[in-house]
Length: 420
Image 1: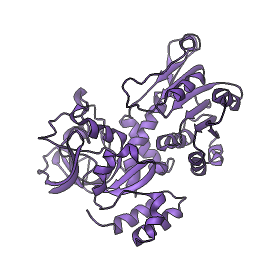
Image 2: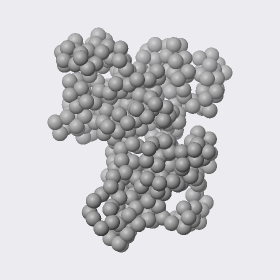
Image 3: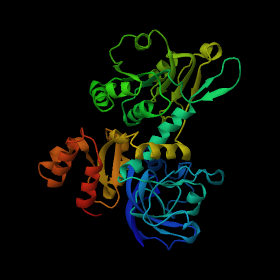
């Protein structure tokens, strides 16, 4: 079977190509990819090439398919896995396989599987490691968001607190405690607000900061104070840009006390240092943001590490159980991370989008891999619609959903967008 895919042939060398997939082996599965969301990790891969630690090939002779946040349908199942999986099932994949101690992952390490393709061959190790996940939903885009959402789930689970008088650590945030999310109205920050409000282990007070009024207002219109209150969470949004002493002000909003759990969503030294200053006794600081600077550092108060039991954690992705939790919560309607998606495009737009990702504002770029579409911001659908009826209709649909991508928009796109 022929597939079309974006492959990396070396540093800064992405190409959209058509090539023949080999027949599947008994322990492999042929699958159709429908959607993939572009991750910053793919941007890093593009600019590092073989220097990326997950790459295992000579890319000039063995190019690999990029993309790892994908969702689709199984087409043909080899006999080894025919009792567990069936053609027609929808799926998502946990790319962090941890196979035999390697860093191999779809989207980084394989010639025949990655998210930015029309068809792929799922290798045996994905099933062997229980990383092929059944996905029961009418929409594909949530399946593509399950991997980034799992990163948020994993970060919340990685938090820990101590037990007075013992060395036992209790995992997770303090239930009913206080939490601050700093620089947190970007796509991953909003996902964290969503999860903090709707998962079973919630804070009683959640303060979210940023320095952009428009972004904060947008976040508050989607994840409302009223909805949070219905789930027992006091939600406060705060612009710290013009606050003379942000730490003191945040502490005052928290009843004069510092916080149990603090998350930092920007790799910015002053923000990270502010997070340290906001920690109360036994407070846990989660450095969520992944810096590109290998020498990135900040100061931390080690007096408080010693005497106030301050501690710090960081996670880089979620595990399979985190992804299963994400899928279950999304299909049950408890999470709706659609606010992460700000742009939509087709397979033809993947290479340029991935290579220039840091220069494109907004959140997640959702790509439909069987479609030929420019990358267009959802906010720009109406302007495009002045000359293109396709975007005019999409603009009408999302306008009826608070400007957010939605099942009706995806259905319309899949039925009406041109094929690649």
